[in-house]
Image 1 (cartoon, each protein chain N blue to C red):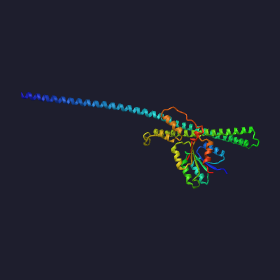
Image 2: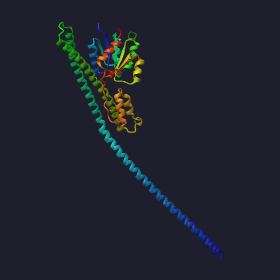
Image 3: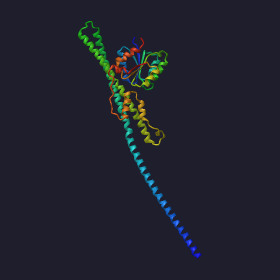
Image 4: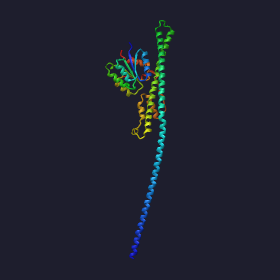
Length: 123
Length: 228
């Protein structure tokens, strides 16, 4: 049974590129267009093995999404990777404090991305 | 003798009085004329300043009447570029997915073949090379999203400027217009990429534009990853 990854990004091209990379490596992908939509999907019982999220999104940004996820007991230890154009150390610290597992600055290299995914995924 | 002396004294007193009165009249006349001249000069200066203000107001109104309709046109052009590049990127993803799936099938076929002949190995190595190329293409294609974000950061302050100018033309004395429009600072705060911050700094300091290299080596790509 393939592991499921929740991909959250307001850009459809980015969601599709991350999905393309993950499905090519054998993962199943669920997509959300912003933090609010992602929380909705997670509240409906979806329990992904990994969350990959953008930072700047309408409705609810990536940091707020991480905080919401960490409040959910079932997802308290689910790895969360930030995938964003933001590269400032200040924002990275904010992400770390919120509970992010890692920070990847766009553009990502698909091969390197899969290596990181394998590294942070349990099992 | 006494009468003559008294007459002379009175004459002197009357003469002095008349002299003083004449001096006073002359002083008053001079003072009044001088005040009139000063007032005329002040009025002339004020009229010149009013004319200058009217000219300035007219120039700004002319500028605003052209700039206000121009801004939505520019932002629409930016949005159109974003939409078109987005569509192109989505089309490319579909094509790349198809190429990649074929490459994977070829590689699997070559790998599972019982007859591991040299041509099959060649097919596999070609498929692997193709997969690597696809990986580089996916990386390059993400610049659509990066470009989109940069253009949005340009379009946003343009729309703010339009709103401000509209208010300025409608009611120049509105109290909310007295506060400073810190667009430069707001623009700087909206940046998310180091390339944006560098370009902003260079522009502010009047430096030549220097292109920003795209990470191409594994080491450069590693710098973009932080695991907490």
